[in-house]
Image 1 (cartoon, rainbow, N blue to C red):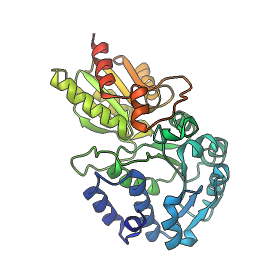
Image 2: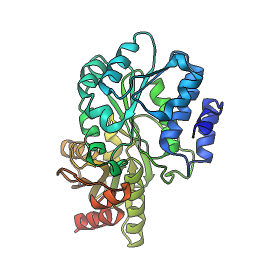
Image 3: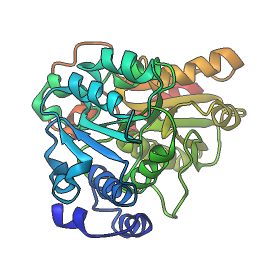
Image 4: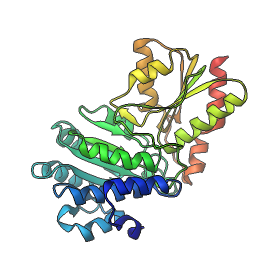
Length: 329
């Protein structure tokens, strides 16, 4: 992993490399490669970490731009906020369940409240580390962070989108939460589609059903469900909502204008995250009924692989098709 990440590539070369190898590169490695390329070009960029060994390569090459705070996420966020006085941007890296749940007070007051350009990067999000048990499930982070002022919330769908998103958030003037998974997933794009912060990606033209998804597995589920509905003669659109906040309400309203049902899919609790954001838009502006697919509102006390847990929660193409057909009546 380190050899690939530490290869001396420019930002443009990293983009080319990630695109060419998008089927095998983990999103967190695409992020790590891009962060190092950005830091080489910007000596004011700081990388802080809470004992994340995937950044060892960064400390070896750019030790003056790296600080390991240890397993102390509250300190990580507090120090990152203070460091923005002399360095910008500041990237604060930790495992998602601890970066958000443990450090929520520091994020609320020190980062969002002060509107400081801290880029909080949480890996192992959603059910990606389900084999460690519920302590490592990160299922409330989207709902919690999108409620905070000034925060931008980004959930890339694959390695290609992750590399581009890293560039975009480094250039953004405000605080950001970048939510990443753990393992490599199938690429979503067939062409080098540009990433635009805050603008949803239309992956399939609108139809009778609209799937709105965020993150790697939910978007793969939506793509497969749309294909299966098409095989049954039911047209279905697909929006990749890679930026959960600011929310691209115009894209949702445009894509759902002639739809008879909207189905949201997320690797997060079914309440509070993407599904709730879509429901807010539909309730305020009027629109078709919404079905939400996500982890149920119960204590998810399960230990298992990511695929097993996603299936157990109903985050599957089969359930997406069933929900869509049931909503159509």
